[in-house]
Amino acid sequence: MAVTPTDLVKWLGQQTDDAELMAQAGQAITLASAMVDAYTRGAHVYASGQTRPGVDAVIQMAAARMLANPEGLRYSAGVVNFADAFTGFTLAELAVLNRYRKRAA
Image (cartoon, rainbow, N blue to C red; front, side, top):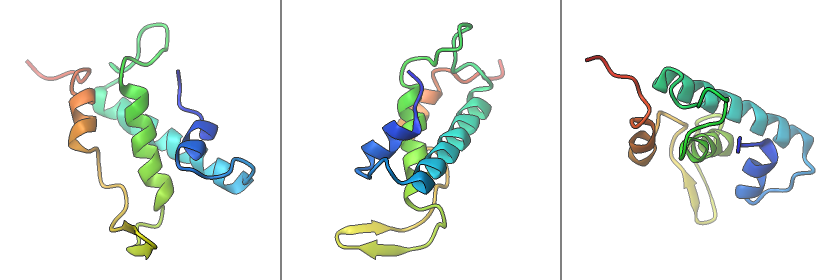
């Protein structure tokens, strides 16, 4: 199952009737997918085009961080604090992606 802008926006607890937010979600998913593709050198998908187990979750988490703070500015909103922008995959995400990464022998 591929990540959709609707999935991402709902997961973040936002309304899906905001066209601008939905467009930004689509861009975040595209960027996160491209970074996963580059990191795994294409090994994250089956020949059929379906993503391998865990990859969609990595794409959704990375895209959520990009969408939540696209400017990369530090700010607080109530109990939520954003310290920086997306700077790379987390250790948990890397644990999933490293299963599919092609490495030199």
